[in-house]
Length: 401
Image (cartoon, rainbow, N blue to C red; front, side):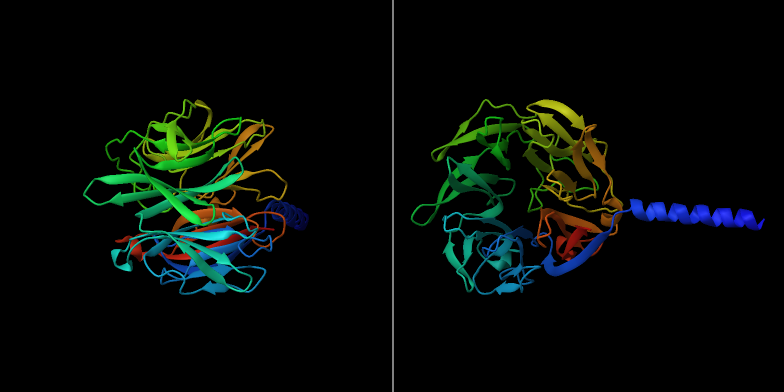
């Protein structure tokens, strides 16, 4: 009897050791409280010239920004934004001086915050200062960098809802010559979902969803337009090329969708030298994603699940293992990668993400300069809500050790 007990304990200890070896060690750090969704946002990138990404987000009053560094002391950007509600930020060196600018977009939600503008803020070696502000252009939903023949521009997607059910989808072009200039407006037939490479010849394009359909009840999930909460009721994508300051429709083939989308990435995940479209969409009103090569479907995921009622669907790409290979991470806690066995969808972070009642945004960046990307995510503080502003949001970092 005693021998049996000893054998049992030895087997248990071996099993526990194997489990500990097999498990990954994660470190989760709460970085900041950054206000209420949907006006909360963040972005990561090098904005002070040290080649290490900082995390940029607004403070609780929506007007002032904070540059949070895991390497250096955090810096608050005060009194540089004087109106509107800051809801999006991008990072790029538009004026070519070697320092990335912070490009801040605004909308008018909540309405009493004032008039929305586009701001450019830059670090001058001592402090962050506003160097340019646009005229009023409408509520800014998202911005994309576009490199045309070595000239960097920003495509700015804006909507105006001046009359009930009469949303105008508008595009502006932000560029720098002798000063920052905003060209436009260009009226679109629907929302922009992607700007960047559209074929294996590295040609750029702008993907616009065009045919509006009747609104679909998405039940538990919110299909959003990346930084806002408007549903994409458009399902037919068309590709346009930028010729000068004009959009010209292209014959380039992109996937024909059957329902709304919640995310769009274009990259060469399988390293075959060709671009794939990774598109978050729905199957019988339940979220999934599909991978296309051109307009050919090559992979369809199972339904993506979560314990919680209200999540904003999002996906981001980066190198979280530090091995030079890229992975796609999604807000439900799934990881998409490519191996010798093909596309692999795993639940690497699902148990971790399921502990948060709501996750709205996800980005990947090497903010601690250890050679691999950390997972940055914006999480809400409660599961059910009566109004969007009930969601106090917190910024977290998930680091794989």
